[in-house]
Image 1 (spheres, rainbow, N blue to C red):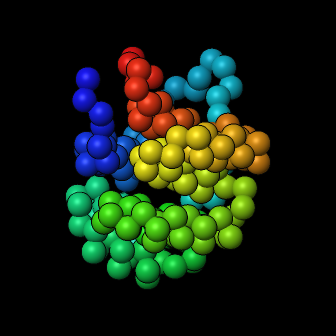
Image 2 (image 1 turned 90 degrees about the horizontal axis):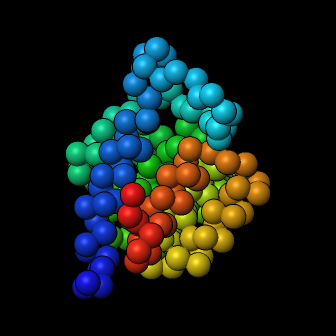
Length: 167
């Protein structure tokens, strides 16, 4: 089996961004019955700023410049979501250093927000830094508790490790 390259992971990351852009909710509470067992929490504050939704849509459509512009407009007014949107656009634009700097900015705004740890772990995993990604997931779980974002990041990490991405 040929070794994966960073380029081969871009389609995987693009698909995962669609989940990020969509927010993972259908909008109709009846479509998502409550689980029988209590699952991870998802109670971090969410911004209602329409520029955030527009930025996510632009990111999902591959319009990185538009997503970056909207993320810059948002700044920290949307909490961690503006910097994390900027981080994802920078990462897709092949600026991993800028992406990690944006994650650090988000971390300074909310040091215990699971979305920050999850985003950092995803970038580290896709950058072939699996041990660092695992450390980020452990710290995130310790500080924020289990969350859907951390579960997604753990799945991304598994997909980047040979033999662990099988369903």
